[in-house]
Length: 237
Length: 237
DNA sequence: CGCAAACTTGATGTTGCTCAAGCTAGGTGG
DNA sequence: CCACCTAGCTTGAGCAACATCAAGTTTGCG
Image (cartoon, rainbow over all chains, first blue to last red; front, side, top):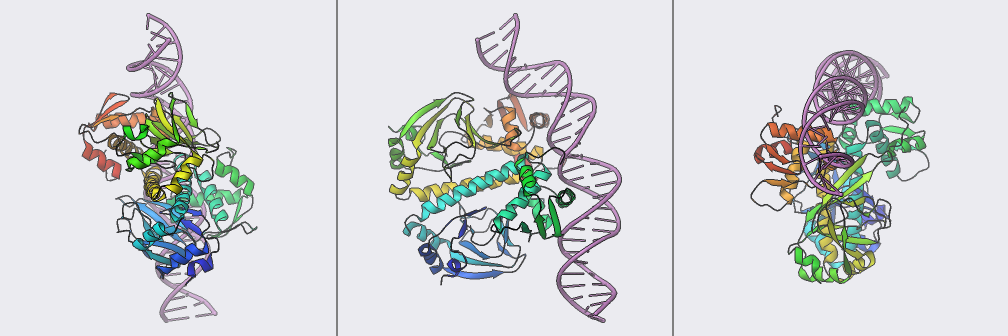
């Protein structure tokens, strides 16, 4: 019954895109689960594709998704990585504007769009709360635009590492779990896999990070990494 | 009294960022103007700056604004251009996350944040309507990410021209009014002024556009421009 | 008319992309 | 259990797109 609420007391929520954290009351999530069903997706499986009818709203319960848009010749841009607690699928015109695909094995809670709409109308304050979340999303999207349009490869990769680090709850240790491939990272940062790989190697050589495996990175000098990410990095880095 | 409504029967609305169109009922805008005051800004003047308290919500009545974010060393990214009917200032944490500056002479309708919040609570359907607008914003932001991360200079400039053309209502003629400088365009597209200038020259030489003046451009081959913008351009362009 | 800001154009430079090998790790079957 | 196989990752060499630097030119305004 309270599947979604059970795994997240203070649920993180996402609306139609990038991830942001937000608290939902138990009552609200109760309403949510009343019109919902759980689904599992294997890595690489598609939840929905760009152009599909947006007839469902999903909440991520476990695992990680990528959202992306494609150009006709196959160039891809990943607009966000979603993890547990995030909401997706609230498309404006009833048409999905991006594809959502599982990176790891993913469990999602599926709600019908009409049911979700009714929820917005009936639960007082629901729309306002979602509006707050949407504003946060927008803010995150603007930061990502700044990154894509004006940051160097090193600054982009540093920003990405900090984002991943901060997302996995702040567990003292600076161990960053990177479930996505270099190709995903590249398409998220507007780079190529080779540049991502080279940049990580350089950060390793400079002692800012340790590459335990390609999917498990440790932050060694967070301060310097933050300076880089903010664009205040010494030019000699 | 109905200042905002008077200039826009079907008002375009913006929420905390990029522009999107949306219809507001006369009743709603009536409520809006009840807690509002008109202000004028000269070109170059600042409405609010990144980091300011977000204590107001503005609706653009006339003219054009730029919204931008800065990196510490002065690199700038313009996240959007706002024209009549757009709303700004609904910041998530009460802190402005970008600067808003007048490009042309601008008239805005200023609302107190608290008054606007009350409006959201009291007018039924208001929050939901704003949520729709926010979703459209988010969608636009994702398209801009795709542009910034994966499009070539030519594709970026073509996309920009079409955006400007479509914004100025569809008045048959393909006359595009460009009130912003090359520097603004460059910072919107993640390019330099020189690249913007050269790209426009190339489009002119290829016969896709005519540069009547630097601020007045005519689209001559919309179809080809649209192909370019979509990323399906012939490599020989 | 003269000045300053904005724009264009050219020559050169650099970042990140492309192309091309190798390398590593995880999974499978012998 | 190990050897192979493949997908993903790293590394290197050369290249291209766009940036930078540097003049000129145009435009609009006092």
